[in-house]
Length: 227
Image 1 (tube, rainbow, N blue to C red):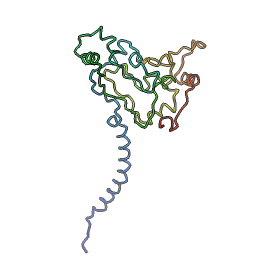
Image 2 (image 1 turned 90 degrees about the vertical axis):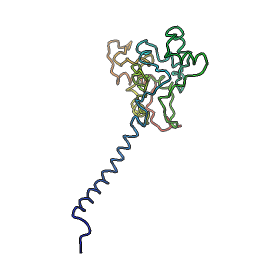
Image 3 (image 1 turned 30 degrees about the vertical axis):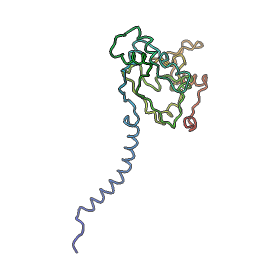
Image 4 (image 1 turned 45 degrees about the vertical axis):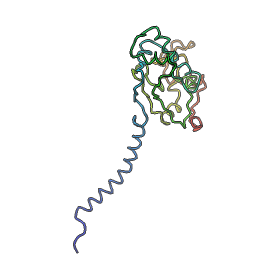
């Protein structure tokens, strides 16, 4: 009886089995990488805004504190986008004829808000309170990155649950004195303790100290964010 399969059929069959065994885990790894990619999370994606507002110029160049514009950051769950009047506090006096700022003047004159493109979009099923993080000593830079050097703002982190848990498990790695919340250049070795004026602090030492003083807990229960 004639042979039904060519001599290389066994080799092809072995390769096919190997491909299935390696392909399934490979697809799983690829899926895990994909869902964490900037394409899916929006991280590092600077959107085109109605006005290309430069945080690098206003924060790093002019030294304007975050809270001058984001006035409710310390008080409510959702930090505010500043109203046009905040822009006009300065720009009714400087750059009054700038073409780039025409949408700002129009917004102010017509009382119609500028439609900024939202960057940080946390999942609807996750609860986040902006004010409590500031109250507990988490600096702006921990979540927003070096926004003081961003010409166009982008989302620094993935905003995935694992990203939040990295901080919630070890909050001492991010804690700082509350009067240094908006200082992007601050580090633990700048801290001066009146009782130990010559001590040079590490982040771990200072973080543990502030963790006790500010009653910061490692909240990793599901109900902390999913309510």
